Length: 321
Image 1 (cartoon, one colour):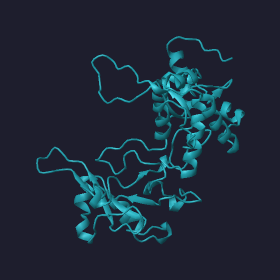
Image 2 (image 1 turned 90 degrees about the vertical axis):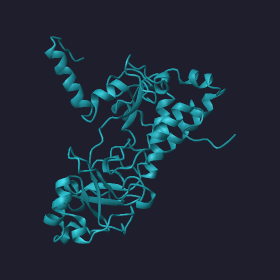
Image 3 (image 1 turned 180 degrees about the vertical axis):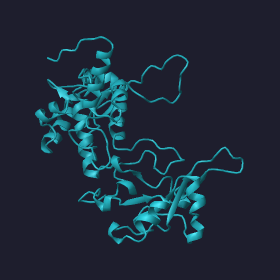
């Protein structure tokens, strides 16, 4: 038997779904972010959240970081302040995002070149993503990290999406542990040709036990599991294996040919937020697509409070057990 992994024995679509949780969210080409790369990639930190390095992880970022400062921030707060621990072209780039900044602080005036590397030295001092305007003479400005010749598409990832390589492995296995405990997973695996799914489930269970990933009390407190069945962290309804692998039915008249949204998807119990690095064990589960949509970036507690208010506003009486 080949060496087993967190994906072994699971339906192919679900195994791939678990792998994709290690990737960042999508990013358009007109943004500065990379599209669908691993969460341990180069981190981009807005200067407004830098706070003289307080945002940095003690163990560092595995592929480094770049602080992005708007031109006005650079000249007024960084250029003459060594306490910021930032050096232009080393761990800092000036980021142009508005036409006003591009015209007020033209990079050629300062002899700057666009950056071409995600690791120090950055081989430049600035990058730009300025949208076009209604003026016929204006065009969008996309300079630096646009193709292979300029450092590849996107400079890095959103800082709050970061997770180390070790964390990614642990979270994949914990998500596989939860996937095996969705309703009907054995039957779904067997229907896809897995004769003995219990062997693969046992491998995941053993790995998780050896790496302190199956503290049942923590899993229940995190709203990830109940009575050894995986539940949606928001509504607490059991998740089915079919929901993990089947695409949602699209509304009539709104068909999108490449839609890949499934009935249940990755759910962050405590939302992703700058400085917290919440893509971590005991914080990731499987939640219904619609529950994920409702919770968005609010977090579970604020969302439940809001839902209670909505019911009250609509004349329902709420009694908490």
